[in-house]
Amino acid sequence: MLSFTFSHPTELVFGIDSVNQVGELTKNLGKKVLLHYGKASIKKSGLYDVVIKSLTEAGLEVVELGGVQANPIFSLVQEGIELCKSEQIEVVLAVGGGSVMDSAKAIAAGVYVEKDYWSYFMKRGDVQKALPIGVVSTLPATGSETSPSSVITNTEVQHKRSINSKQILPKFAIVDPSYHTTLPAYQTACGISDILSHLIERYFTHTTHVDFTDRLLEASFQTLLINGPLVMMNPQDLNARSEIAFASLVAHNGLLGSGREEDWASHRIEHELSNYYDIAHGAGLAIIMPHWMRYVYKENPARFEQFARRVFKIDLAFDRQEETVLAGIDAYEQFLQDLLLPTTLTEAGILDDRFEEMADNSFVDRGHTVGNFKKLNKADVMNIFRLSK
Ligand code: NZQ
Ligand code: ZN
Image (cartoon, rainbow, N blue to C red; front, side, top):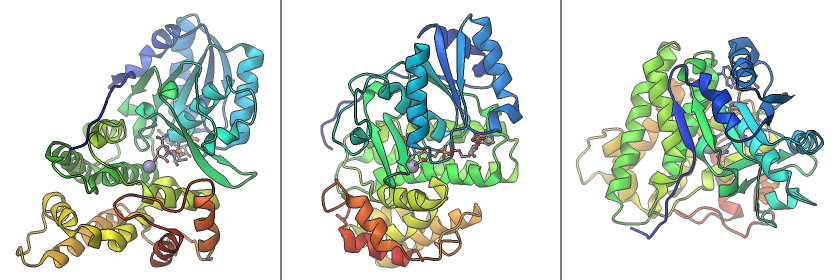
């Protein structure tokens, strides 16, 4: 196990009706709030009205900025920053999915950046300060509620990149699973794929003696394998929704990667897919992840065998390691297919071949390899795109 430091300052407020606390929690952070949200979902579900009522009852002054799109864009972030400055906003409140939360985080930090904010996303500047952020999460997927990241697409330069800083960790995160029941099946499935991917990025490591986090990761996998099908069959199943929501937070709050080297190649490869094409992050990961697995398993077959045996209960004889490994990967891919997710680019309607351009783009300003389980160069990234066809 590696040495590590873990701390987490976000107050997590979880459960049915927890959203009623949003006014009081926000009030602790400031009097004038930027309410940031997406397109139509929170108005349709009635969540918008509940939030406005709670904020008003707490005596807060509210300025609104809606319209965040899936895979959020930098131009709206810039608009939000200007609004915060002109309205002298004291706290930013995100109500929505990962895209809304990420956009809110980027706005909160951008208020304190004098010039060339995009260079921070290209790792040429460190976030030093941000307005306090609160979130009401409507989609269990990204873990943005308790992650120090904000992933934004700059359509002018066609880059999807992140800032990462403790400064943008939300002060509080409200997760009320009753508002997850309005999610379309496709978004629910994309969320499950993203959560599983956050576990996988941590599970496949060369760090040894990480039994404790292995077991926590395996318990998290099991929770999703059991509760994923339950919510797909019955979207109103609040018990299953709650299990998935809790798992989504722990999957990406940093705890499960503590003491071990993590990978993250698949995320970086996927971010080029959702940068170039109109595809949900979780769907892009459903395509990339099984192909990444088949491409890299020979680096450490024993770890893949462990995944197959413990997570998917593949029970072949011990002298049939490679068959076991491949059966485990197939079982993972089949699970994604059972969620009705695409597992090839063709199934996702991506028929052209911009693999070289995407691979080049992913390395701009970032060295020559990606990932740790197998260090992938540009040719490897292109091979994974080709295998994903
Ligand atoms: O815009 P609205 O109308 O709100 O609709 C959204 C959107 O169309 C809808 N939705 C959300 N909650 C709903 C709902 N519809 C009905 N009922 C609800 N309760 O779902 C659609 C997708 O929402 P979005 O926020 O885009 O999805 P997600 O949460 O998957 O976020 C994806 C973004 O997060 C980034 C991804 O790259 C992508 O840009 N990530 C952020 C991370 C982080 N900050 O730590 C880590 C992740 O790995 C990821 O990269
Ligand atoms: Zn992700």
